[in-house]
Image (cartoon, one colour):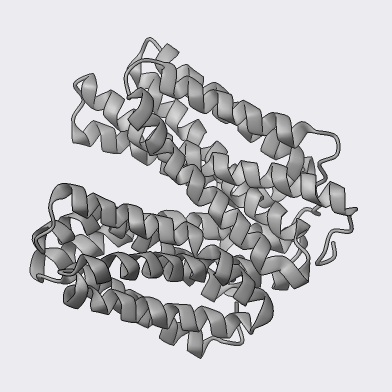
Length: 384
């Protein structure tokens, strides 16, 4: 397969719209299911341990499907697998409230995790295959905006309809079916991938070490920010509502700033841009203790910081798409999906450890992580 999939402009546009809808559904299934299932189990009397074990089934589904995904794509094709994953996600969400026995929620969560991983990896791969090199970064910025909107849509659904009953699950089901209908449109085209000669995940880690490091960094910082930023801000004198608004500002910046980041990724050296964004993120995090007392400075800073650190991932997706093609592209993205889970695990643990010991543990952790990444990126500029 070549770097650019040769398609008529209208076909490319419709195909891109369909696959970007898949990215949004990935974000939705992740954010909606995580919060909804936890709240539902708590309301039924289950404790944190049982809720945590159920959440771990999602991660287990991700871990088990990622290594075999490149071969499945080669055998079945990306479009058909995405359609299957959307159908499975829709059915699984509908089965949660319909299941008479709560122990069935564990295999259902496993299946939902596997389907979500397919949507995550193949939406990235498919978008990059549709993108043209001259606008690749802007295409990946659109992808990140869609995924971030999906992440925001899950909590929004819960805030509107609540977590009780079958309605929130069925809304997720309907949205998955809507994306499935878009992908099934005959005009939508997908690339063809050969089965990989090498299926060992470590092979892809060696191919793209900086991409793997990027994924771990972004997952760790995003999960840490969502978990602890409000608590840190309240410790610095903010009330609960104001602290929550800081998180919203950070997420809004992560969405809006991808537009200029995508433009810069198409007009300047992408590796240099990754380093620059990491340095900006380092300085921004280090400034939190000095500016958080002033809302007029704190809000713009969090807005720009969210855009900078998510922009690192946007540009690295672009670099991966420029360098790798075919089964290698699927393999690298599959390992990046695994790495995302690793970042989700270590980020909150390290941030919590830092906050237990230092007043400004969260910004120190964030700044140190961004600085370490920037230094590593500068040392590995010849690698992805």
